[in-house]
Length: 405
Image (cartoon, rainbow, N blue to C red; front, side, top):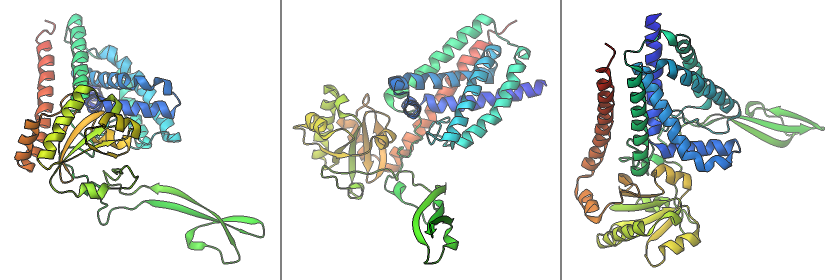
């Protein structure tokens, strides 16, 4: 029984840590998912609270996971874990049956699960959670009660700090299709031999006032009159990661391929709502625009804003602008105003509105080897994850020096 208690605690702890971490480093993504839930369940009045809810959920999951893994306040945390799992098991069952949203977002954008897969996952986790709850009094703490409460507060502050930092400076790890190093044009191509969508097609024909359904392999003769056809999706098949990317000009013409095939370097200014750009940000964008013109770098804004708003903000700047779907823009960069540097269709660097690059920073990147830029970014993501893990271990390690004598 003791071994089973340890296995259950470690298993649930690891799952919650992973689920919480991939959300806490991408609070905007969590907010978008909450917005989808509020819209699906006709709770649009709560939409402004999507970001706080997203951060709170991520922090709670991460803290629960850490406490479970390291045996901190297990008696208390077991109550929160059980309530959490019961609520989300019921919710994911509703999502699986009615399918109001295509993805529950339980693992952020790191791992995509269907609603039924998520429900089955919760069914696997629930027995372990119930067992921990039943056995909660058997888990012995090696820390003083006061130390545990202090540690719990530090963990909440630590997790919240990661979320706030990621909100202001983009996710610490980018799981999106438009991450650094990805090629947007290549990501729109369906590879040869990729699985195709499978449909169950039913054809309705009528004869002598009687309607019947037929499959494609046994269609009736010409004495029957075609009435209607029904098609049910069985499996989606392969969907290219950036298949949703498209650009239209002011005339409504698609210019996606034309822009992605431009040679040399390219700067995208990404903004879902251009009216949120302040004067300081606009001044920095103008500097980048002037630098880009001098260096023959393609420079353009991608936005989903209304034409009148665009004209009001960009009047006199000479910046070219194009239209892209708001959902795609949020996938490209988790910042209402973001900057992307590309070489051809390959993404080299991304900045949030709080980190708009100066011209000398942009020039330094352009002078560097493309592979080195991408490799450097990926190495920084790994180092950041390792550093956060070490900080967490130091916090926990220090607390265990204060264990009960």
